[in-house]
Amino acid sequence: MTGPAPLPGLLRPARHRLPALVGDLRQLASVQRIALRDGPDRGLPLLAFSTGGGLDFQIKENGTLDIRSLHFRGRPVGWQHPAGEPGNPERALTGFLVTCGLENVRAPRAGMAQHGSLAMSPVRVTGVGEDWAAAQPQLFVEGEIIQPQPNGAVFRLHRRITAPIGAARLTISDRIENISATAAEMMILYHLNFGFPVVQPGFTVALGARRIVEIADSEITSAPGAPECHPVDPAAQVRLICPASADWPGLDIRLEFDRASLPYLQTWRDARAGRNILALEPCNCALLADGTSGPGPTLRPGAHWHGQLSMTFA
Image 1 (cartoon, rainbow, N blue to C red):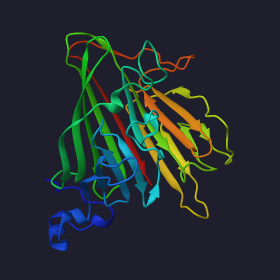
Image 2 (image 1 turned 90 degrees about the vertical axis):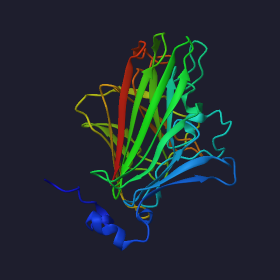
Image 3 (image 1 turned 135 degrees about the vertical axis):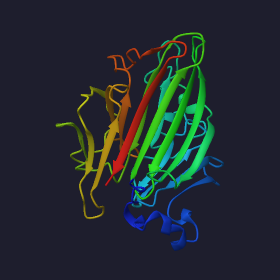
Image 4 (image 1 turned 45 degrees about the vertical axis):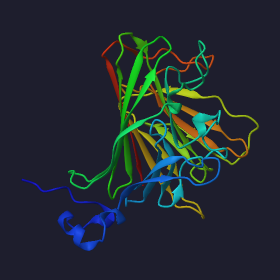
């Protein structure tokens, strides 16, 4: 019979010895409930994750458990909007991860708002904390969102986010169920906003053997670029590389997602002054020529959809 998996990095001592080596295990890794005290996001409730493996990120507790900010070894990875979140019409840019859906994910269509209303839906947190007893000790949060659809259907999203203690990896697992008596189309898009100092000359994104993004210079543009949507081969890997420079060490990010549930990867670049954003967006529906979305799957009463997204930083 094998024992528990050893912890990586600074947590090498056998797990049973850890309580004797620290005053509180949370000095090694923790999830803390905090609230911002000033600025445009004053009062915003957050869950601050610190894995002890160099990965630190903040989860927005007031909507969809999306990720507000993310740092790896002290280096900011995401883009941050200067106007904050409350009342911001650019809600898809108000954090590192903003989940778009479930009735719409792109340009407005059939009276539905751009990016959908999921990001504004309140969440009920059902569990949060540190699990040191798991085979792989981890930080976690889970909760659920109830979202009515335009045709009267009702979807329930159950989300669980985990991050192994002592590592630099996070996983988002979503389960969406139709809890009504009416069938409805379901769309979802995970809007990941990368910013400086990750997004700079030399930064590339590869989808399998094909390079789909390459930032060759720091040219400022007057308008954002058009999104591009790439069908994803089930065997393809998504890898983001930021080479080392005089100011920053290199960074290697591996993005993995369930390609059966999320068969497309959309990219979008905004190189305007004050922006410098590169968005990567796994999604379950195609991009049409007019900027709207192709059909998503139809969830019949009692049916469910499951998707998973992971990121590893090195």
